Each structure stands twice: as structure tokens, then as C-alpha cells.
Length: 136
Length: 249
Ligand code: SF4
Ligand code: FES
Image 1 (cartoon, rainbow over the protein chains, first blue to last red):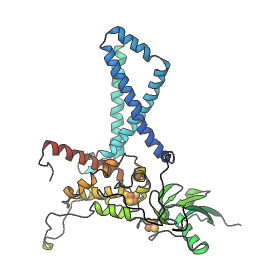
Image 2: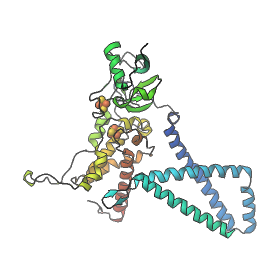
Image 3: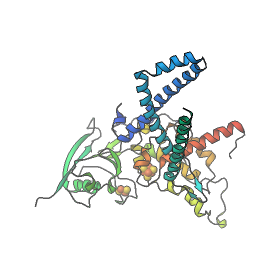
Image 4: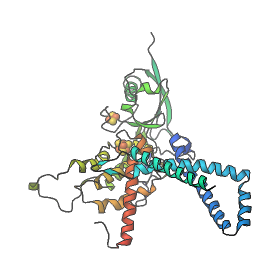
């Protein structure tokens, strides 16, 4: 790949401020989507520890659950849930743009694809919720 | 009755004289049917003939009048003053591009990128003229038509922070155009074009901010073209591992 073109004299080359993502709401929404992955990663790490603790027997697991019940961890999980929902919504919307769905000769409009994905997500979530409630 | 007016804050930059651009305010008559470009033309005709900007068709076809209007890339021939009441309206050169003078930016970089994606039909063997034109079905036309509507206005580049941060990025419109020819049933240049779209400064630079598609005045949706090229690139990569001799010709 070629090197960046040498600056030409007389031209003004604008600089990108470090706060560029505060300039437009769409940029900020994009940054939030990126940041959401940090929270989701931490959540998954905690989940893995939880599974590991469960394998160590009931006492270890109970102690772990007690730690999780602290206000700090509850607050973290509330925030992580918010980010996870935001990430899922944007992800499904964007997937609908990327994935071309055809019916016969015509392309299904991305909005409809997204609507289908959201419906599927909703039904799946309800089913899981139902299963969990039935068991407890 | 006093004439209604509106104020424009226009970026001025004189090469070799100014170190940095500065804003100059002009108060112009307000007309309901005026667009920002009309106001600029009024300034140039009546107030300051040195104001420099590009335009040509005045009807959203030529793609040369793109500027930042209140911080958003717009075709100024399609941006009505009435949508920015009561003003003032900030008019700046397209973001991220080097400024030549006032509102005129240097488009060399974009032109070079356009050429790199080979936006023309490539044939392995040309049909003789006597064989007639290359024909397409309506469905084959439909497959790429949206991506062929680009007027090269570069608004999508001015909306793309990735282009601002790494200027080597081939960028939305050029990728959309390369993708458009990859989708064309008459074209046989995929093996030449796709490696350029899939290289390090190509589609993988894109983090899907999506603003290119939001500002595009022609509904091209370059963000979709980029993501779909990523899918094609990933497919090629898997195939090249599974079938080292190349699954796709
Ligand atoms: S893709 Fe849209 S915004 Fe970008 S240059 Fe083409 S017409 Fe302009
Ligand atoms: S002047 Fe041609 S697109 Fe605006």
C-alpha cells in the first residue's frame, strides 16, 4: 500500500480532535456500542468464574453468590444489562443491513428483516424466562 | 416591512496567507425557496466576489456542492434555509479533506481511490461487437442498481470518522462502487477488485459507524456495501483454506 500523500504546501489539513466522538449524537451512539463490549466481556468473565465455582461444590458456590449480592456487583450487572440490551438492539439492526434476504427475485427490505429478528429474539427471551420461572 | 434576513457563518481560508481557516458572517435575504447554495451565490454576486466554492447543476446531480451545514455533510443545493431557522447557519468545507481555499477541498485522494477499485466492467474476453450488447435481466440490474446511484459527492467521507482518523482508508463511496461492479452480471473482474477491497486499508478498517449511509443523498447505503464486502472477503478466506487452489474464480 502506498504511503500517505505528502502534504501539499498552501493547503490546510484539518486535525481530528480527541473529542471527535462528542461532536455528533450518531458518533456518541457508536462509541457507546463499542464500549458496551467491555461490560459484556466482564460479565462473561464473571459468568465463567460462576461456572467454575459451581464445580467446586455447594459451599464455594454459596460464598460466590454472596459476593455477587453486594451493591457494587448488583450495580455493575444493572449497567451491564443496559449495555447488553443496547448492543443486541444495534447488532440486530445492523445485521439486517448486512444480510441480504431474498424472496424470489426481490430483496426483503432490511426493516422487515430486522423486525423478524426482533420478534425471534423476543420469543426466545420469553421462552427462556418461562422455563426459568417454571423451574423455580 | 423590513426584509427578512438570515445569517451564514462561512469558513474562509486564503492559501499561503492564512494559517488557519476562520469564520466570516454574512447576512443575506431570507427566502423560503432558497437553499444554502443560493445564499452563497448571493454573497458571491452582491457582497464578496472572492468567496470560493464548487457547484454546477443546482439539482442534486453533479455532486460538487457538498459542504458541512451546521456540522453535517449536505448537498448545499438541497439544503433549504427554511430548515435552519432562525440561523445562524454554519457553512464549512467538507470535513477531513484538505482545504484549498474557502469552501473548496482537495479531492485528489478520493479520485485516486476511485481509480483503485476499478469501477468499470472488466471482461476476460470481450464479445465481438457483432454479438451485440451484454444483456441483463431486471433482477440482475436490481442486484447492483442502488450502488450505482452514487454521484461522487463525498458526503460519506466527510461523515466517516474512520476516514478522518486514518486517511488511507479507501472509504465508503469507492468501496460501494467497487462492490457495485462485483455484483454486475456482465463483470468478470471480481478476482482483481475484491483483493483491493479486502486489503488492510479496505473494508476491514470500517467499524460500522453507519453515518456514511445516513448522510448519502442518493440512498446508496455504502455501509451495507462495505459490510457485505466483508462477508465476501471472509468467505473467500475460508474457501482459500478449505480449497487452497481457490474456490472462487
Ligand atoms: S455514496 Fe452517497 S454520499 Fe457517498 S459519494 Fe456516493 S452519493 Fe455521495
Ligand atoms: S450543485 Fe450539483 S449536486 Fe448540488
